[in-house]
Image (cartoon, rainbow, N blue to C red):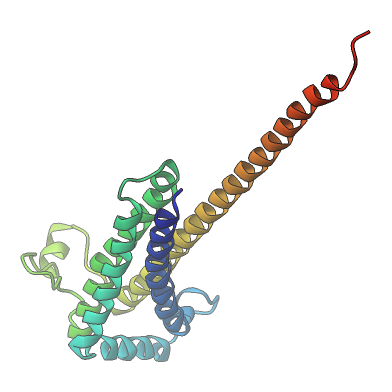
Length: 218
C-alpha cells in the first residue's frame, strides 16, 4: 500500500474509532441508571423507575445543540467508513463492510427505540405511539385482542435494553477494526519476511558462480 493510501486509511480509522468510543462513553454514563432495571436479581423499586424516568426526561429536554452535536458525530463516523470503502481492498470489504453494517444497526436501534422511547417518556403518554402517521393503540388494541402498548415500567426497561444492545453493537465495531489492524500488521510482517528470504536466497545464488570461477582447469 502506498504511503498516501496508508495515511488516508489511518485517518479514516481515526474517524470511525472516535465516534464509536464517544457513544460508548455516553452509554457507560447511562449504565448506573440501567443497572437496577436489568442487571440485579432484586425487583426494581418505584424509586428506581422514577430516577430513570426523571433522568431521561432531563436528557430529552436538553438544548437542541446537544442533539446536533450528537448527529454530527454520527455523520463523522459514516464519513470514516465511506473514506475506507472508497476503492476498497479485500480487507476493507471484509472488516469495514461488517463494521458499517453494525454501525447502521446501531443507528437503527437509536432511531427506532431510543429516540422514540425518549419521546414517549418525555410526553408521559405510554399508551400512545408518538410517531407521526401512526394510530394510537390504547383501547383499540385491547378491544381487538391485538398487542397492547407497553406501560411505564416496561417502556423504561425496553429503553435500558436498547442501550445494552447499542453498546454491544459498538463494541463489535471496535473488535472488527482491531481485527483489521492485526490482519494488516501480520500481512506486512509476512511480506517483509518473504522479501528478506528472497534477498538471502539471491545472495546465495550469486555467490555460487564466484566460488566456481576460482577453480583452475587441469
